[in-house]
Every structure is written in C-alpha cells, then in structure tokens.
Image 1 (spheres, rainbow, N blue to C red):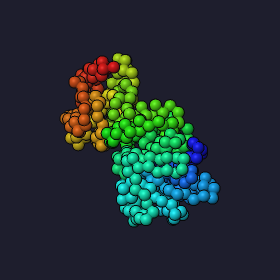
Image 2 (cartoon, one colour):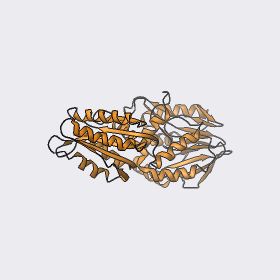
Image 3 (spheres, rainbow, N blue to C red):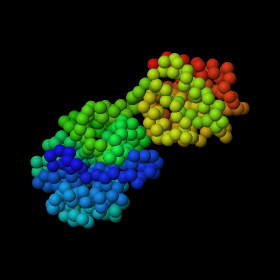
Image 4 (cartoon, helix red, strand yellow):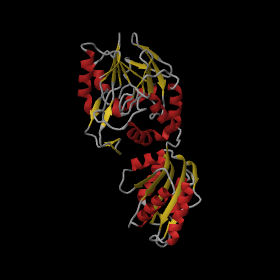
Length: 386
C-alpha cells in the first residue's frame, strides 16, 4: 500500500487471534502495522507479531526491490510490534536499530541484547535524515508504555503514532473506527489520560496530513475528528449524553428492576439509555460505555454479605482505568440484609471526581410499590440532569 511519496505499508492482518492481550475479544482480528520509508536511505518502522515474520519480510523485500534497509525504527516494544526485531537484525546485519533508552533496555529483557555497536539511541527532539525526508522524534512515555516514541516526517507531514489512534480489527474488515478505537483506548490506554494529553499537546502543534498508527487504518481524512476524540477521551470528558445501567441479577428480580428504571428514564426524556448485563456481556464493552456517557447506574444483588462478583470485577476495571468525572447511582437487592450499595460505594469512592446521586434504590427480593417509588425518584433525578 502506497501512503505518500516513498512511504509504504507492509503490515499484516491477524485473524487467528481470539483475545488481544489475553483479554479483549477481537471478532474481526487485529492489524499489526509496519511502514517503509524509501529515500536515499531506507527506514523500516516497527516489526510485527511473532507469527507473521515471514509475511512481513516478504512484503518488505518487495518494496526494497533489491536494496537493503539502513534503519529499523522501534517506536514501541510491546511484543505484537517488536517480536521480529531479532529476525530483521539477522536478515540485515548492516542495518542500525533505532530506539529510546527504554526500548533498548526492553530489548535486553526480551532478546538478551541491546544491539551494541549497531544501535542509535533517540530522545525527544532527536532527528534522522533519510535524504529528502527529515524525521524527528517525539517522546510519548506511557502512551501506553514508558519507552514509546512517535516519529514525524516533516517532508510528507506524516505522524507515525505508535499505538495512539489505533483500534481493534484487521484492515481487511470494514467497520466503524469510533466504536473499536474507543474500546481499544479505554481498555488499553485509558488509565494514562495525563500522558496522552501531554503527547497531544506536542503533536497538535505539527502540520499533520496523515496519521499512521501501529493498529487500525491509516488516517488521512477528517483528522480533526480523531484528534478531537483523543482529546475527549484523555481528558475523561463526556462524549455522549446518557445513562449506562450496568447490572447483575441472580434470579431475575434485579433485571426486572433495571428494565423498569430503563423505561422510566426513557419516558422522562433521557436522551440515551444503555443497559448491560455484566455476567453475560463483554465487560470491555461495558467499560467503554461507562467512559463514553456521563451517568452510570450500578445495580446488583447482595452476595455473601458484599457485592456480586461480576459487579465487583466491573468496578475494579473502572478503578484500574482511572474512571472519573461521572455521576453514579446505585440499585441494590437483598432479601433480608441488602448491603450491596455500601460495598459498591466504598469501591467507587476510590475514583476521582465522582458525584453520587441523592436517590438510590433498595429492593428486598422482588419489586413492590415502595421500591418502584425509589426507582421513580432516581429516574426523576437523573433525567433532570439532561
């Protein structure tokens, strides 16, 4: 794939993968992106996952057309991008390996070598000339690993952004960018909002016409949208007005209460209501929805004197990913001693800038007039905020 003058895509599509990073469901596979910059000198930008080395090198050799690369630029050391560094180094022994100090420390950990004698250490502000193409390097620590560098080609106005602006899904499948990029961001990068903000402050000063991430499609149109989404996500701002109801239910009574609350919210004019069953639905999708919207209702049963496991796991996911700046309400169920709200609130108080609703709801077994009235009051309070 030709991207710009002398810039080519040599990435691969992985449809064998079922779980990315061992936890994220990827029904449409995954792309591991790699690029070649051909000038007076030739630079390859990152390798690919271990199982695709032969395919990657075949694509590289097709672009090289008999020439040999001068550099392998390593922006990110996560194994889905770095696994074939040693394969490349053995195939092209005269090529220089380019990376940050942190990247070479990780190479020592993974490969037992820092490629002494053939390495080039880069940092913020370092440059590399390929001839007509002038590359500059931008430190992007903790986006989302500490060694990460972005690369900017000032000649062609191309930003090589490592994992930033990436998404789930292989490139031979057509799907919406926002949905899978959002799930990717909040699942993998979401905790690191402050470092992403710092990186955005650097790159938004550049004249960028193309963004080349290490996952997902090459972005060359409507870049304001993608930059804007990253600004919203990394600032933990609300993207879509609405209420997410995340619940778990043992015998169906809490599920019935959730359905009643959903109906009341819609009748009272809530612009959007999303309901997710934490015991059955993909929790990564639930995390994405919680970060996307401004209001979250947690509804569950009391279990062993505490919080039902699926709900407790979900809340820990939120805490681990720096959930913040949201309004949270609770619905609990307990036949003789409901304590779920106490447990859920204690966990949610670990999150920053959370506003708790005045009204919550307690169900003792099944819905009755009293618990419906509590849900009505909660729906009224939430709907009034839109």
